[in-house]
Image 1 (cartoon, helix red, strand yellow):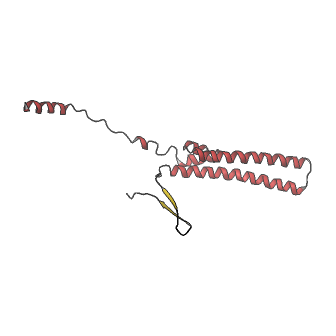
Image 2 (tube, rainbow, N blue to C red; image 1 turned 60 degrees about the vertical axis):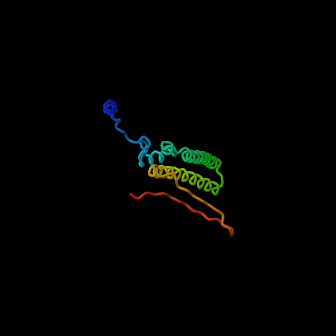
Image 3 (cartoon, rainbow, N blue to C red; image 1 turned 90 degrees about the vertical axis):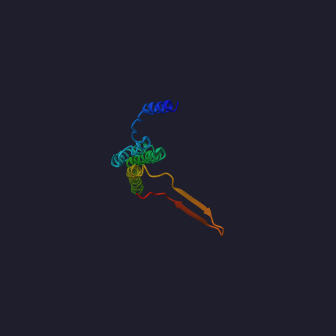
Length: 155
């Protein structure tokens, strides 16, 4: 009987299937959806595009909203400037509108630049650990105490 059990266990052990080779970790396949420079140029061209590719919906929506408001206000200012020129208004009012137009166009340029820079940095920090903790606590005598913990590994 013992001989039969030993023989059966040897046969069963020989029939154990070889484990399949383990592929790359599926959680790390999306280590970086796009590279930093393409993300920068995408958001530089169209604010929010690089953020959308990085699945940063809120950030992209903020840049798109700022872009829409700035474009709308610059179009409005340009129309008002054309009207003031057409009716030969006071030169001080025309200068004020030119200054407003310039301000709105500069805001559009900065929005493009900041959207591009944010997309560039977001791709660089794509794998940054999300377990950062911030704590704020009241002090007994009044005031607030703040603390932060950032885990890191030394290799």
